[in-house]
Length: 384
Ligand SMILES: Cc1cc2nc3c(=O)[nH]c(=O)nc-3n(C[C@H](O)[C@H](O)[C@H](O)COP(=O)(O)OP(=O)(O)OC[C@H]3O[C@@H](n4cnc5c(N)ncnc54)[C@H](O)[C@@H]3O)c2cc1C
Image (cartoon, rainbow, N blue to C red; front, side, top):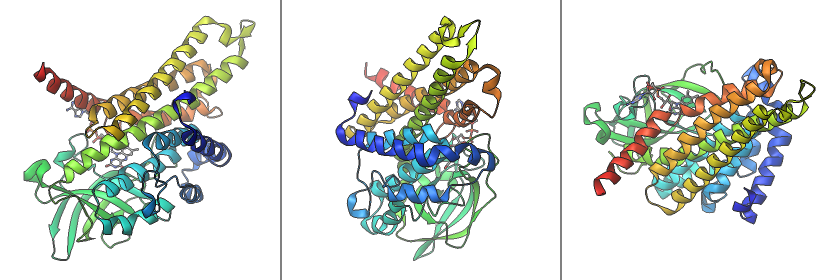
């Protein structure tokens, strides 16, 4: 599908591909085992301009288009999905809403550090009792004159411990529902932000995911994104955008699994010939190849929608739903093509299988994506 990319996009893709092959892929299996966060790699991603990819040049960003960002996520996920998610989260759920909804002062204060990799970013929406039903969040904020004070607990926060700036959703009063929610940029180095021990996860083991307690956490008065009470809209717009990054991560994991399966099917001999010569295996690879291309096409179409349309919830949900479900099918087939060896940690498909699993869960489960698409269909049906 290279022909769909322009010269600039191909140049960035090749640069990220080379960096990922030389610097990211070699340590991926070790980091999966140790759970070590690759701090130096993130410093290099910052130097390469990959942490503020859609941030305007005036704030130290690379000011690139959405497809270039997605292609970069895919390349990093091909090498190590843990690195891809940390990079994607900084770009899409932290830098993006600050650019879109932050004041000039906020942009100048936070974006140069985020874009250069001096600080990593994240997003604090989920709570222990508010996941898919995010509007039910109970983290409270109150106005203290020259600053805000936040209290509550956030769950499953990517880049927890290792990140510094987090877009955080809190409510003035839970009984107001979505209308009570505002969005803030929280500096994790301020008093009152306490990260718990990172979760022991099935996959993405080198990405840090934590529960966070906000205990009288102080937030500067001007660190509000959009208007007070508009935070849920900020969150939904951010998710519409960030879901594309997760879809790109799913495409990258799938491509890695596909390449491993293709190589193994070529080399593995059974019944006197390589297993790719058995039509059942060849057809399976043909299906994997087709599904991968379909997911990427849907993703790049959704990226165009995100650049051209004011609302693109349905396009993003379709891309995320399809790419993440496809990813889980492809990694499962890749393990099957490897037979018993696919069940061994000696082969990368074992890690890819575990890393893939979360793609249908975070930034909205597959069921939530179907709810978004179905809502658009109901609206459309009302117009018929
Ligand atoms: C590794 C990881 C990283 C994460 N990073 C972040 C992060 O950085 N920031 C952040 O804010 N959150 C993050 N999350 C949280 C993630 O977005 C949530 O886990 C996800 O939104 C689902 O919420 P939940 O886990 O509470 O599941 P629940 O909402 O409790 O859902 C449980 C099941 O019920 C289904 N379900 C729920 N409601 C309905 C319905 N109405 N109809 C049909 N089915 C339904 C769901 O689809 C799911 O299958 C992360 C999660 C993980 C695992």
